[in-house]
Image 1 (cartoon, helix red, strand yellow):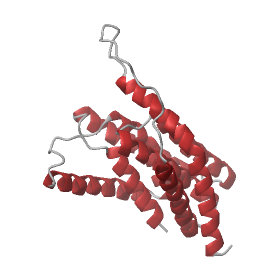
Image 2: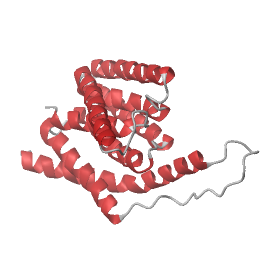
Image 3: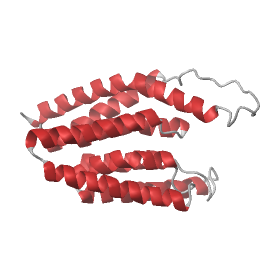
Image 4: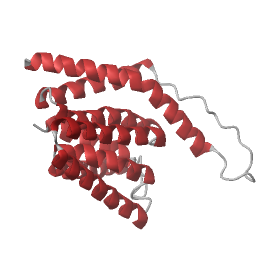
Length: 233
């Protein structure tokens, strides 16, 4: 199949998947907002929690769907029509939705994170079973465990450095990037930290943040992973 047709096919898959996920993302984000806004105990002062799902505007919908289509097309045009591209492709489409959640509400909905992790790992199992990529599966699984352990250790040292929502996301990112190669996982993590550092310095210089301000690391982890995936051959 020609590169142009591969690109268009990838775009069609990404657009369809992105559009289908937006309602699920909206509901998952609403549930997370409701949980984070609920009183800590029954003795707490009764508050009215707005459980109305956050509204995704038409422009936001277009951006989410367009990003899913463009990035999916780029990944497939570089990798070609092969089942081996499935785990990183699933990861990429899910990370676009999670990046939106972290950007607008600084939340990574638990339901969405678990669903992404299950989908990425299931896609790896499928590819391993069909194509015999058991070594690929083993390496990706070990890297996912190691990446989880790293972020979990950072969270234990200081939760301000790494929120547990980011830790929860790490197995999916670790598995999906390591499916490309362990180096891709290292590159994604390094790029995410560089983006955090640069953005933090810019915000501090603009007096829009302080040195101790919380950073939505999930957003930058998604950006780092996406950058590595679309530039990997």
